Length: 220
Image (cartoon, rainbow, N blue to C red; front, side):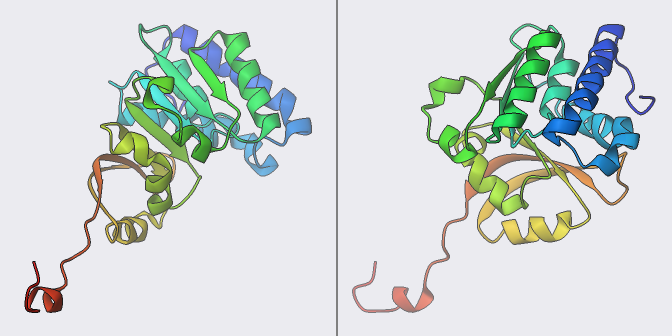
């Protein structure tokens, strides 16, 4: 718990209640790797809190592949009762979605849970979810795949806030083959080799013109 700084008593109490619910559900839902439970606060809670710290002005979040709620549930707790706050959690696994709904209900958090595949949510009309300030994901996919999954929001003005491990640099390099984007890196306080990547201005990279074609007679 000491790794999470600058939170009020209400948020601290909600985090403790969340941790208690997770431990209660863990034996039947297998929400997190059992080996990480002894280090729950640092490995999961404090690590997840870094997403909110990277975009503290964002009020409406979309969390993809939420799993046990990291970082989405932690973000909702840190947002507290702020006006216009909303965190949408997308989780295809029914058991995990049920856990997320239980935590949201018992802690009275500004959360809606979508028990759907991310691809299905991406096909919804934009007005279904309303304004999305930031899209988060942790341990979900490589950066290029995250861009594909979150394209409707990231190309529409939302920021991406993604936890990445030691391979973050190679993932960024690979993503630049297909995408143009602005990137801010925050070194993880939990994993010295990891980063919290904040992505904005995402666009698909246009194919390079074919020089041979432009030299052909009549080519335009």
